[in-house]
Length: 292
Image 1 (cartoon, rainbow, N blue to C red):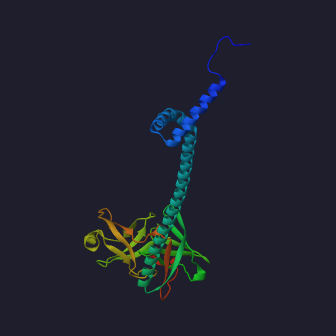
Image 2: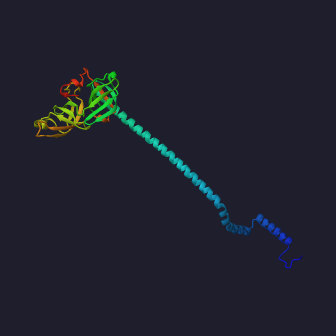
Image 3: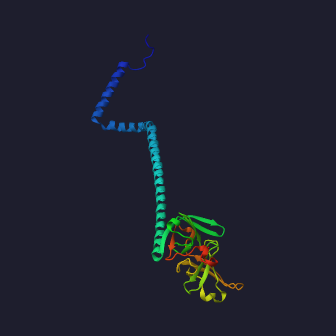
């Protein structure tokens, strides 16, 4: 059947035209004409949004992947640095502890070098605290030559006396124990008194100081040392510093308090003292002077 209307050129003519146009474009591209280059530029501007939209999912995926990997790397690096920082802090604490221990040991060695008597270092095993009672346990006993009534000091002053001796450990009564009395002497004036424990860690009472001559014999800041009386502590060891002097007109003696020189319950190492002639045990001392 013949068509009623002719819609356009024939198929052969259209194919021929397209071939001619293609050949012309190929020749123009080969010769790189300026007019075609301008047309290409304009066409690329029109095509760019389409290319951008086509590439957008790919670029978004790449961006997310890079940022995710970077975040994971940052988190991993942060965790590693945090762990390293914790290790450094722990090492610093150990270094500070070792430095503190070395300082304590040097002070003990310095103290032992100044002592003419025989000394031996012992470690504090435990602190025994009860109302008005202050005692510590040390890791030296009868097998090490420790005896009851033996003097114990630290790098700063008199600490106390041994009151119980086991084979491998001993118990030391500190000078602040309420049952402990220690003969002392004021370095500045030579005045003698008795330092009595009050059961608290930082106080000693000085007994037998008459009101009438207290102003001339003792004052705040005076250094107290062992007098050697009482038969247990060798003379000359630091005991404490006078902190308070009060006249009590209602009593025959003044109220005088001192602060111990020794670290007492803060020690980790102490020194045991052997004199040339070991003294008897604390139970044999009259009137409880110098020990139990």
